[in-house]
Image 1 (cartoon, rainbow, N blue to C red):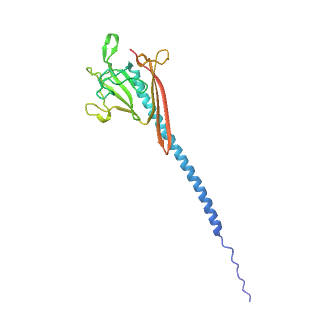
Image 2 (spheres, one colour):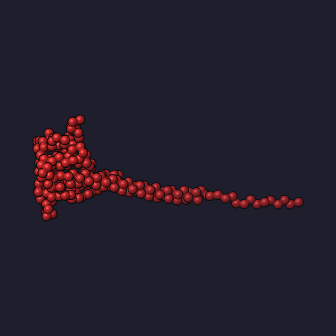
Length: 224
């Protein structure tokens, strides 16, 4: 009697060579994908930081714009003594890097304090914009008249309860320029200015790349 044997089918599987090929292909795909993700994340971070810098520049400009629009004019030198002024108590000078505003003094309810109400001439505080290193600050010098809400400020290193620190307007400033324009649109001296043009550039380093944001605007003085 003959016995029939069933033949065994070929067992499914991968050879070593096929496995190595698949692993190499998957490694290449993984490397390409990780490179793409890293590049995308880097670009997204740069874009976010650039947008943040631009927001800072715009916010700084809004602060300066508000002060200019509330100011009667630009002073050549600070009209009120500053114990920490450069070169002496009256050493501040308006120019391309310094802006000294004669800003209308107000009380705590934001009412303007007048030195001559009949002619609508207001008392004046000084707001001084200046660079210290790469930081843009605003120093306030109060006129010291009755009910003046303004408080004189000091350099951060010399701040105290009676003399708070100058307001930090922007960090990472690499370029700052103040220009003074007359009513005809021509460049003029600070005291003859009808408007002030401000150009500001901020720069930050991210992943060994420089991110720059620039902002420029012109604002009109209240001119009394």
